[in-house]
Image 1 (cartoon, rainbow, N blue to C red):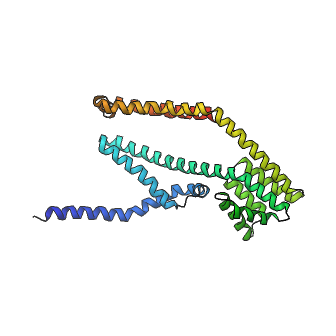
Image 2: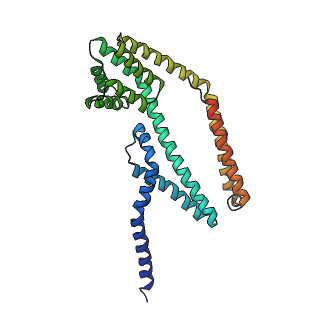
Length: 285
């Protein structure tokens, strides 16, 4: 009898472990199918992760917060099931937002390097090199991400893809007005003839002026972006402070239906305010 309880605990633990290892891979594969459309985003963001690894991340981000909520609030079954759905949606949205932010950051870095890449290509062609040899100079002299992206272009040409099609693929992978303009100009000049080095130099000057205009716009919209952080962060700071110094108010918010509804409304209003300020401070040129 002394060993009955430890054996029972061991048996339950073994059953849980068996179920875990039996069905875990099936769960991961099911989530990986949903994550599969993110593969293009992973490539654009240069994130060295497989869809299965991303599925594990989404699963962890969905289950861990849900477990914390269940432990702290101990809600009813329907509320707990709804919370699991909400945390799962937030996990998918959060991972997608993280990938999009990585893509935007990498695209910004690439666009900042594009002017110098164009000048390198134009300079190489001015001394008599061909377009492909000029791209080799870009790969040699430029840092990432320009080096990686133009290396992909050269690799595609080595397996039979035309240079123009490889540049079009680069424009799809790194979508921006500057890259589209570069790919179209190179294709047009290659088909009709002309001074491509001069065209690329003019394009580099245009990108430089465009960047200067973007910086001026960011300076003009700095007040709106700062206000966005203050307006949305102040309620969170004040609410956290009140919850620390007023336990009764905190319990009323977390452990009553009215309090939870108020919290949900506050979160929704903060999200709406964040979206509105983003629209105010965004200007596309």
